[in-house]
Image (cartoon, rainbow, N blue to C red; front, side, top):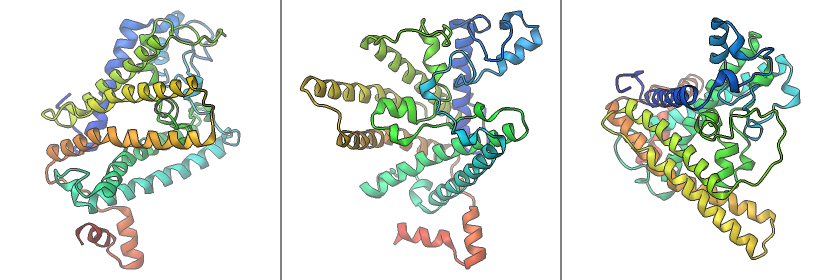
Length: 350
């Protein structure tokens, strides 16, 4: 994997993560499941193992990572599509708008990278003070969030606009931020669920059964729940460590600590909530506010290990590589005769 380079540090890291997912999928399909017998698509008329070889190949290649339209779909992790977006025209217009929004968000992030000297050096992201340091971390995370959503929306426009897919096959990649009042809900509902099945369900013997069968919901033993949770974040750590390798083979492991810390955060919040129940506390609106603050503080604290390592690895992989002039700079220079980058850069130097 260390020879798989794209010429851009961030894309090297993303490529490594994709290769890591491919390895998890290989384990999933070859060792842990029997997809031809266990998986069903809603349009299947016969079991997949009865199809000719070439049809079986394309059937397997069409498996959705989130299980959309498949028997292993986890309903709560896939946001429902708004009713007014079910028509093809409305969906394409909506996603085209999202493409523009995320494009300009990416441009703003790139402009910030270009103007802030901390991103062109090996200085700590927190070296500019507490407040600006957390803004640096947030901006770096915004790059990941915006690019994931931009690519997803762009592909959705192409797939639905060319009638290759129906709109319902492309629900929002991420859940709603209002659901992120616990760390468990942040990772299980708000953040993207592209690889949920690769990291969670194949490792559970009971997960391969058909989800269309209605079962009585039983409370899962906490030991089994935490084993599943820890396994999911171990897979996440492996996947992102593959990104470390591709990005810079001599700087490996900076992604691991962040993902291994997340089960600890979930354990802390579960213990606090259980303690609250035991002393008779009932759910109130202010508790969600506390929850949002808790999630923000925890993610901000634990993310700094990952983001700092990622920035340093990118700088080491491509020393002297400068962020290109953004479209925002060209537009402001053309319309207002203003050097936008110079003005923003003065905020950090002055």
